[in-house]
Length: 244
Image (cartoon, rainbow, N blue to C red):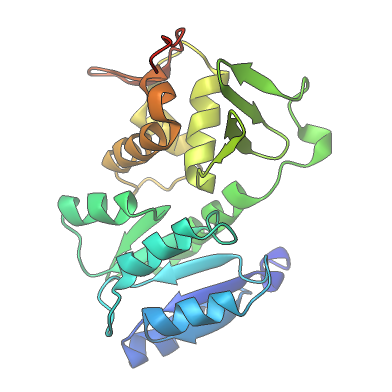
């Protein structure tokens, strides 16, 4: 897989044995790897790199120092240069509340240790596919889309609200576009995961967390992402009142 050979992965893992193993596996899959042991070193490293020198981050939750892994994820999401960096959280904490907390911090995906190498490889490939710009020859005709104060352009995968860019991650944008382009249609959680290229092991509950994040970032327009009980989610826009 030659395309992945140019992809640079930032790995943040404090266990030296696992860090070495993961770095070897990533290199074997064709990635260039920078492996660091704590969040502060990772953040310093990112701030010394030009965009887009790093293409994806794998971050453990339990890290030594002042920041844990989720603190690092939140800091990355707050930084304009790195806010769209695909992030996979890799941790031994597998309870549903931990998954929800990880995705709620801004991570795109969540894999529980001990992981299966084939699944991890597939999830990384899916994250990178989501982050790639749409080639002009397959871009959706018509260019700019608009509803109320929201505008989005499938060619560059950017959503704006008024004069502000909505800071959606690559995964969040994919979900937003899927629902918005299929306006009124109800998508099940499984259909959303399929559209994202997720593996069968992905938890449908993760879709709920991504939807929650999208709604929060869209502000008053977030209510247009409607939960349909027992079915899934739909995009059902309506005029906003003057007070919104």
